[in-house]
Amino acid sequence: MNLKTVIGTGPTSQTTKTVYLYAGSMLIATVSGSTTSYFHEDHLGDTRLVTQKQGNSATVVFATNYEPFGIDAH
Picture (cartoon, one colour):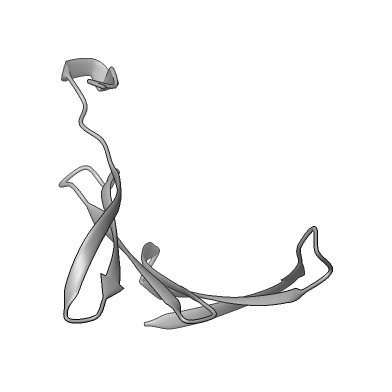
């Protein structure tokens, strides 16, 4: 696994540090402040689901589905 860290300034001039966690070339998680987001890919490498830890459970913050030939089903 490897880590990449980005430090940026947002519109309120507050500095935000985001750590990107990769397994090979696949992004598997980001950590920004106290928020950790997990990226779930399908067999083709497309991100289908993004979850965030909320206490002892996970909350879906992004989900998508594709039809044949890559058409977004939503």
